[in-house]
Every structure is written in C-alpha cells, then in structure tokens.
Image (tube, rainbow, N blue to C red; front, side, top):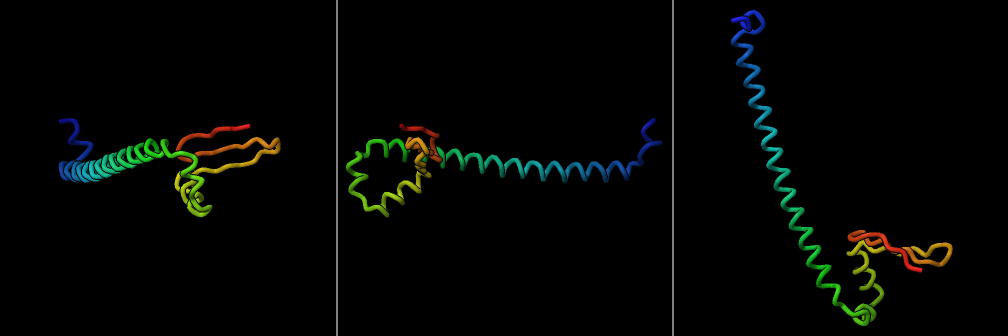
Amino acid sequence: MAATDLITFDELRARLAELDDTRTIAERALETLRTHRKRIGGLEADRDTLLDSSVGVAPDDLESLTPEERHHVYKMLKLRVIVCSDEALEVTEGILRRLCYV
C-alpha cells in the first residue's frame, strides 16, 4: 500500500480519533443551535400574537394609562419617537419597522 510510507497505522488511528471527537463536538453545537432557533421561533410567535392582540386596543385605553404605564408599554414595544427639525415625527418601532409621520 502506497500510504504506508506517508503515515503509520497508529498516526492514522490518532487522527481518526481526533476527527471523531471534532465531529461529536460539532454535532452537539448544531443541536444547541437548533434548540436556540426553535426557542427564538417560539418567542417570535409569542411576540406576533401579543402584537396582534394589542392592535385592537383603542387609543382611549392607552390614554387612560398613567404616563408611567404608557412609558412602560412603549418601552416593551421598543417604541421611540423623535421630533425632526421640520417638526415631523420619526417613529422607530424596534419590533416592527421605521415609520415617518408629518
């Protein structure tokens, strides 16, 4: 066999054992990533459900909250409003997208 001059059987066994260990570690890491991805998917579904249920909240309901309560709701939604120099409002919804209102 031509390979016998390049590597001994003991070296081959050692390298194969290293590769097997590396494969085992990689498989564990992939399983961890799959678990995380599944968890993130569940959290995103929960977020979407919460947002869908919040759409029906009337503005009067929000106005009945104290400023601290409204601030807490806006903070949970990662809502940020910036008054631009032309007095337009720039609304950044961290969960959704960026909108501009004039």
